[in-house]
Amino acid sequence: MDLKAENISFSYNKKRQILKDVSLSLNSNQIVGLIGDSGSGKSTLCKIISGYISNYSGKVTLDDKEIPDKDYYPVQLIFQHPEKTMNPKWKMDKVLNEAWAPTQELKDTFGLKDSWLTRWPNELSGGELQRFSILRALNPKTKFIIADEISTMLDAVTQVQIWDALIKHCRTNNIGILAVSHDPELLEVICDDILYFKDINHI
Amino acid sequence: MSEMPWYNKGLFSSLNLRQKTLLTIGLTAFVLIVIFISGTLINANLPTNFAIKMQPPSFEHLFGTDWMGRDMFIRTIKGLSLSIVIGLGASIISSIIATILAFVASINRVCDEFVSWLIDLFASIPHILLIMMISIALGKGAFGVTMAVAFSHWVNLTRVLRAEVLQINTSEYVALSKRFGKSKLWIAKEHILPLVLSQIFVGTLLVFPHAIMHESSVTFLGFGLSPHEPAVGIILAESMSYLAMGAWWLAFFPGISLLIVVLLFDIMGENLKRLFDPSEANN
Image (cartoon, each protein chain N blue to C red):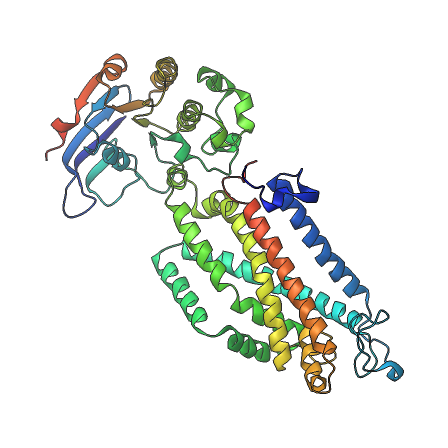
């Protein structure tokens, strides 16, 4: 499957345009890295591709078809701050099962402990929560994962563990990944191809 | 040495703040329930005994007796329990209205404008006037008063809930839920409702004192309950004609009792609000 973003332009206000004619294309058997400076608009691009922002100009297509907005969105964004993406009044069990019910095997590969499931989000650490938010996004209907700085706040060991599990799952299930980071060393290890944000953004 | 705060002295010094809050809530609830239950057990048609009419307060008749020789203490308790029932009905109905309107406001911009307009409209009419009009339109009596108080007291809670729902709607977990293909109704039920539930609950309790006060005042003015129902408002209205004759106890004790009941509800509401504070809600 191919995910294409064509000529995306966007600005939050009239004074400053943040994205201009950004085009990129991803294949579902690829892991593509995206490097850029802080505040350059990487996250905005991620939100546009994964359907969070709708008032942009340009086109996002999946296999040359527009993505329907009502159903489960096949392009899933994983946020940088997992604690913000979880309802504080939900137990982790409910948080995990909101999108789908992951198998026990998958839970084990991500190092998810059963004892965490009965806790509230504010009782777990950032790394623990991030495992939940990644696993949640791996619904069988997901075709692409947009990983927006998902491992920035994790220690090296956890980073390796999480990326290992994610890449293994995505390779076997033909899910494409766009990995956004400003850590070139990380992207060099995990990606097939690296894009530089300043090259694709024509500002 | 700094001085100990007042709440850490004396009888309850071994309790922490949370336990004290719970104790306060428990005690106030207990007193209110006792008033309510004893009120419902009293027969509304008290025996009249003209031999003991217009007696000032004594140990036999704590609140004195009225011009028909009825014990004012019993009448007051009966009146308070009636007020509690009306207050409870009114505040529950008004919270339901507030909750529904807050969710309606979150549907889209037009609905939001409409709800805001409705809030402004009702907030701009004096409460007491609105209550009188609705009460008369619905044929007075307990039903009319309850509805009148309910339809005039949803405004503040709606305003708070609307803001709360708006804020939750812009959160990342709601946006994510939409990407998971969840419907608006599902998000409202599963995501938003649990987060505003404590607000609704506390809001209901804080409407309660208003409801009781307004019920008494419209009844006092003669637009509320009918005279044979011994509501506190009726008792106060009747006592007016005897006040000049020096029968001060007819107005004083029922008035003070009403004030105490209202304050008890207020204390309970405030303490529950503290207990439900979001930062402590998970403990």
